[in-house]
Image (cartoon, rainbow, N blue to C red; front, side):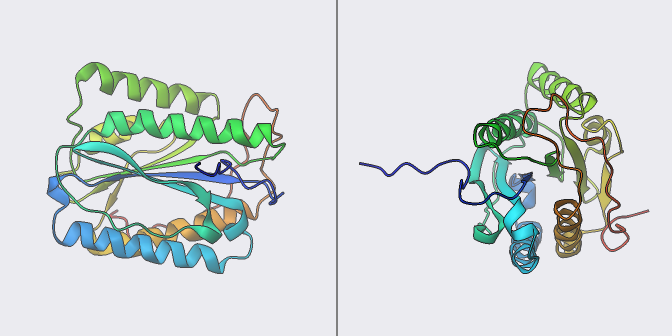
Length: 233
């Protein structure tokens, strides 16, 4: 008989900051891009573990879109998060991945409520070096769902375009608060994940979490580190 593993650790009473990483592993990421992405993820895991609050409060899931959509790493506390090794290939079902990411976040928030845990507004990171290859109706569904949830203060979205072929116009449609950020080059993955771990550390140390029975997420804004190290201007 398989042992049941709860979606959240009930022995950890800390408020939670859920972060879903939606990562492009399509065929165009073969070579240096996927290698640098893997290196960046490894550093991200190490940095989070060094933050005494973020390691207990931040929960990470890694969902990839390359040919198909895969929940590579289900949500887990940062103190237990092990960076997966990702492989590139296939098309770019970005919209399908967004829909899956939203479902994973919904289930995670439900688990927080069921366990009486407070939580911060969840984060959704979308990184792609191309354009979605999904059917148009699925693309429209993903964009509409994501934007509606943001209007309800239910999520914070950070779209990031990698390289010269990223569809920055589409990625910018995913966020109502900010245009998509363009990464300088694949060598910047390490700097991006360093920025992300520092940002999540600041969020988890803030006092902007909401009650588990709140209808809207916190509207508080936490000052984040500058993006100069990895972003083009």
